[in-house]
Image 1 (spheres, one colour):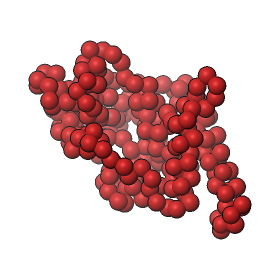
Image 2 (cartoon, helix red, strand yellow; image 1 turned 90 degrees about the vertical axis):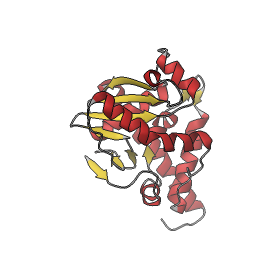
Image 3 (cartoon, helix red, strand yellow; image 1 turned 135 degrees about the horizontal axis):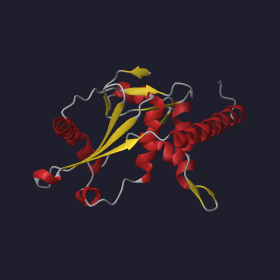
Length: 211
């Protein structure tokens, strides 16, 4: 497992991710509609093209909900550690062992087999989790790609909201590795990355930019 030990959110971490497909965006890369690829795929590819051509990160936008999540995540991690009586090892990012140009940035490693993915959403979304509404498909894809990158066997999905009563603040659901789903993603992701590289090559050729 090739890890890069940087603090998530730091300028160095953002720079290390430039032009690389992260686990949180794999669902966008593979998004399909009834008529073909989804718009999120084209938008993601454009952002990664910009990153590779300029060397600058494109996803630096933040809003109040994102700032809340970032500020609350350490509290959520502590609550999870206490509930499960374990230690979360933080890591900057992990590159995929075979596919160049893609990575994950898990919220923590658990022992030799596990991961944790922490969400600190708005209260409405957290309450849906408490009531068993299920985990969004994009998060399942994210966690499966994290397991592909880290060769781990499971990932605990954590939703945390300190605005609720104590016994309702923490939701945990374990997601086991799905080798069939990962195999399908490991077939499709290289196609996305190859198309990305081809578009950059075409742009460089047309506008005579040195590779």
